[in-house]
View 1 (cartoon, rainbow, N blue to C red):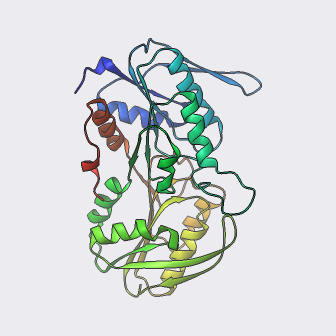
View 2 (cartoon, rainbow, N blue to C red):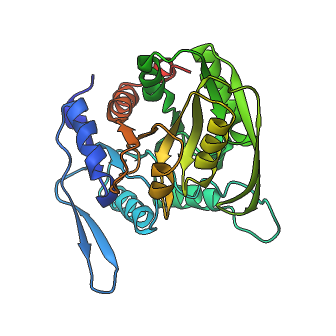
View 3 (cartoon, one colour):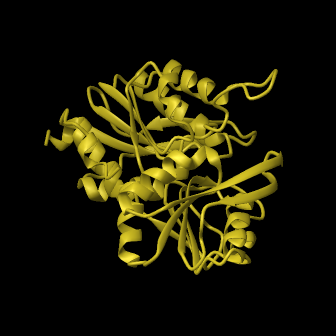
Amino acid sequence: MRDKNSYMVFSGTATTYLAEKICQSLGCPLGALQITKFSDGEFAVSYEESIRGRDIFLVQSTFPNSDNLMELLLMIDAAKRASARTINAVIPYFGWARQDRKDKPRVSIGAKLVADLLSAAGVNRVITMDLHADQIQGFFNVPVDHLYASGVILPYLQGLHLDNLVVASPDVGGSKRANTYAKYLGCPLVLCNKTRARANVVASMQIIGDVMDKNVVIIDDMVDTAGTITKAADIMKEAGAKTVRACASHCVMSGPASERVQNSALEEIVFTDSIPYTQRCAKVKQLSVADMFAETIRRVINNESISDQYLV
């Protein structure tokens, strides 16, 4: 591995907990960064040590509120102006990813806008995980390393030693992701067909497949209000499922999500720690992706392939 002095890792306010674990895995200190906040809500970023000629890795998930994205943009800009050799944005959760196309007239494509903002700020590379849509990688004009949470979720599922296992997708759009898990685990795939009344509100849902006396694992990329995933779990339990679990990459869990999960038929719901979870829900479990991101950073530094660390 290259000299540790050749690269440095910094973190924004929202993702310090994960950056510290990444640095522990890398065996390097977390860089000194100061964020000064003004009384009107404006803030400024400054590096408290020299980064001239260094490869800089900036760890920050861009979940709401938008201050997290603005922090990252300012960190990139400050690094560029401080003559960093390369600027690598490590974004475990890439926000605005659900706005990846025009699904109705006169709407924005937020994911493309965020990609343009990061590029304009001066980023040289983006390392992220489980984008809501794979095509978002094409919104960037810089290299994107797209990691998969399956690297930590699949070993956890295998450790449960569940018999009569079935993998389910909560909607048709997530069928490709769920099918990948099903093939790896060697089990059947079940789909849920849902219709929405409006954003975050499910109107109806039907199961396509057999869940009778099965241990069901629902796979998704994120859980926001938990309306879809809890409704799917309840319907599968009513259809005769033995147990129902859920696994998702990103723990958005906004609004009534925790209460819905707690009161649902779910045995547990497993996330990564790409987003911090501070609410209390006994059914929520988080697996750390710090080692996976640390290994990716190692490989980027050493110009090595990252593809062989993927399970699926």
